[in-house]
Image (cartoon, rainbow, N blue to C red):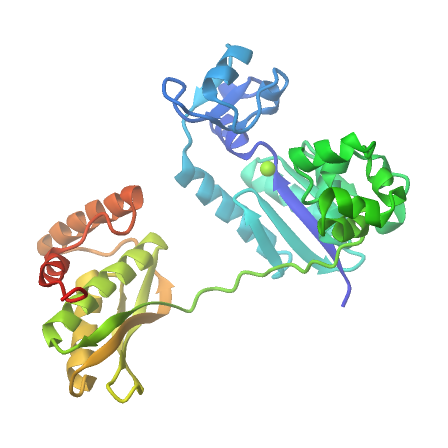
Length: 386
Ligand SMILES: [Mg+2]
């Protein structure tokens, strides 16, 4: 089935969210990014700041020099993520076929012939409900939709159809094509290839000498052809962690300690996605190399390390057979959105606090930043390196 493709891109996203939430900033140069005192860089800047030459990933110090009157704000990622989710929810009202490219950009596929009409509706709804400017490029493939979007910016719609390739695409600089970064652009310019049209007329063999195997793609793109499909994100159905040991393990306690650790990892992953799981499974490889899995489904969902561990340990107890073991894994499935209004008992409240601190440390310093007592015990035993 042929489709129209829309590339929807929020304009200067972080900066426009801040301007919207603080009307005093409307019409003023706004820079969102790292601390100017240290080595922070510009994450996003408003169009007003761009007029001074400020751009993304520029050092904050330089940006401040270029635009001393700019209002500088720290990056408020939770806020932008929430807003991005709400924009995505609006897209889903129009089509299920969505490829999320980044926090502020997504490709949508809609029925052929309805692209422009749908784009107008989407922009209207996003503007009305969220008061955020959105640019949309419309075409029949990703390449042209993306280029159309860059021509539409800021805050507009533009269609670019394959039949317009000659009079529009060929006049544009080579850097509009995917895979043409500053280095490739410079190389091409050296050979007098400045516009997309120049690529069309340049012999393929000679082009290969300049950019290698990318030449064939460039030729296709230059003709406005692109058969890349949209990559739809499938919703995750489960999370799992497993460890294969470098040698046979005979100690049951050791396996339980590993299960405890894996349960902690899974609990963390669930919580960081705001999910809870109903089903816990354990996987083992037995001495005859057969794989055994056992699962249990709970009445209520959980994202708690200890709850996951308790079930996994019980499953292990019941299906472990005789040692040695070579592999152990834990999986959680039956995922649902975590309830944010869970009422905690005093004891649970304490545990919850510890968990939040642990999660924060992991977020900041990586998954191995913290582990509980059991892993330390394992390491002391030097099971891997006897
Ligand atoms: Mg954007």
